Every structure is written in structure tokens, then in C-alpha cells.
Amino acid sequence: MNNLFSLKDQTILLTGSLGLIGKEITKSLYEFGANLILTDIHDEDFYIKNYEQKIKSLRINDNQKILYKQADITSIESIAELIDFSEKRFNRIDTLINLAGTDAKIDEELNINLDSFENFPIDLWEKSIDININGVFKITQSVSKHMKKHKSGNIILTASTYSLVSPNHNLYNNTNSSTRISKPIDYVASKSIIPNYTRYLATHLSKNGIRANYVVPHGVENKNPQWFKDNFSKLSPLSRMCNVNELCGPYVFLASKASSYMNGASIVVDGGWTAW
Image 1 (tube, rainbow, N blue to C red):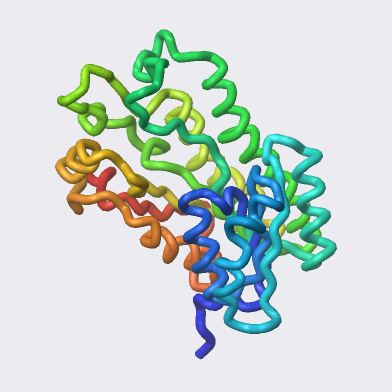
Image 2: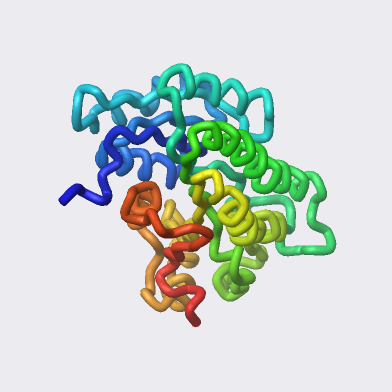
């Protein structure tokens, strides 16, 4: 029986590939045999200096390729250059995995009260809309045109539990500090588009052999302060945050033939956070 999870001979375009989640998923996709086109906002010199040798050391066969191309998903011109680059080197893009996005970090030293909806800075709102909504639209629209020519394709988008529920304010309550922080409205609102946007893609592009699904991560540990991890453990059914490598399986699954009858669906990887 063929390995349903094999990605051999498949070409995957991965945006946001140098981020926390992107770096880990890149390794898994490569280990399962995919040819990869990695892209991020960082330039090629940054990639070569920090990541190239680490990623290429994972190669499982001599024919497997991994290439990097800087791109800005908010720019139609930049995306066009990225797709042209991909077509010239691989002829086709079988799967798009979009991880690119902006996410305000929890920082007690911020001078802006991001918990204040009525005073939330409009420039931060517009930045999130431009990347998390307009950028997602531009990259999926452009790649779907390419996929339509080949009458096949697979689009995997990345949502958030805050696409499904509102932030629990108890998670962000640090009793040892007078500074109030929370997950700001720009992230919550801009990520909330992903579920229905994916369903739209799934139902409108399926006639062209293109399917679309999305992953819902939550609480990926990344040097978080202890008070935050303690709060998270009290609120999560699994009583801990997510290890970044626990997201690899869902993305590999959606990229593989094992998920061939999934379309317009979600895989929620939140330790039961939205099950309460």
C-alpha cells in the first residue's frame, strides 16, 4: 500500500516559513519528501545565514529541492514574482500553506494599552487588516489562478482559536503587575475571516480540482512568562500550552493524499480550549 502521508514529488509553497510555526512545519514537510518553496518577508541573505544549512541537512533524497524567495503577501507585484519564480523552477504549485500574518505579542512593557477597544490605534488595526485579510486574499487569489491552469490544487490556511471564540481575559491577568494586557481586537477580527473565507474557496474552487481547508492552532509555547503559562494551564483541558511540533501532523495530513476528501474543513489543535 502506498504511504498516504508521503509528499514525494509534491511542490509546496509555504508563506511565513521563517516564523515559529513555519520553521517547524518546514522540517516536517521536507522529511515527508516534499519539494519546498519557502517565502517570508526576510531577504535571501537572512535565510542563507540563519536557516539554509539547517533545513537542507534534512534532505531524504538527492532529488529533493528546497528554495527560498523573499515575498510580501500584501503586494501583488511581489506575489507575481514569487509565482513566476515557482513556475520556472518547478512548473507547478501543488499546495499553498499560508502561515504569513501579523500577531501582536504579549509584552508588559508596551506603551500602548492594547486592551482598550475605544482607544485602539487605527494604524495597528490597518496593519493587521492589510496582512491578515488583504494579504491572505491576494496570495490565495494569485495561487489559485496558477492551480486552475493545472486543474488541481490544495490550499491550507491558518486560523486561530480567536477565529472561533473571544479571548478569555483571565488568561492575560497578571496579578503581580498593574499593567493590563490582552489579545488585541485587530488580531481577533482579522483572523475571524479565515473559517468562512476558506469555506468560500472550498465551494467555489472545487470545480477546478482545488480544495481548501484550515488549521486552528492555539497557545504555542514561545518563551512565555511563567505567570502566563500558569494561567493557561488552569484554563486549558490539557493543562498546558502547545509544543510547536504538535502542529506538524495536521499540516502534513492536509497536504497529503490522506486528506483527499476533506474540503472546507477545519482541524482544531487547541488542547480542547474551544471545547469548554
